[in-house]
Image (tube, rainbow, N blue to C red; front, side):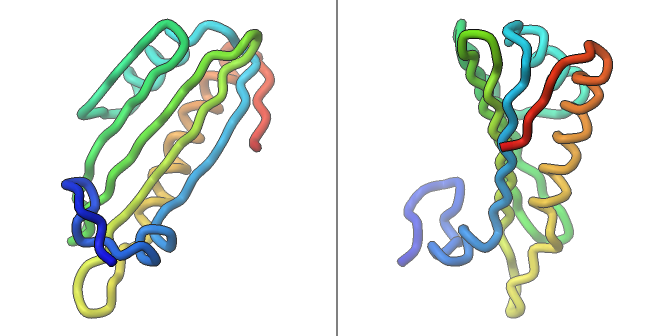
Length: 127
C-alpha cells in the first residue's frame, strides 16, 4: 500500500515507520509564545500555525537524495508545555538509504530546547 498524499507519496507504510523518529518532552513553562519564538529564531520552518494553546511548525529538507518532513507540535497545558518533535525521512534509490537524517533533525531540535531550558532554568522531562 502506498500513501496517497503529497507529503509521503513514495513511502510504503513500513518505510514510513522505519524512517520516522519522534521525541516527546514535557517543559515546565506555560509561556508558549516564548518557547515558539525561541524555536523560530534558532531553526528554519516553511510552515507555521499558531493558536492560543497550540503551535505547529513544519519544514521540508532535501539531504543527500533523501526528502525529509520535520514537524514540531507544541501544546500548552495548565502549567507546562507538551512538545512532540517528529522527523520523517524518505529513503531513495535501490538500497532505500535515508542517511539517518530524521535522527539528526530531532537531535538538533532537542539541543535548541535544552538551550532554552538552561537559559531560563526550567524543568524538562523526556517522555
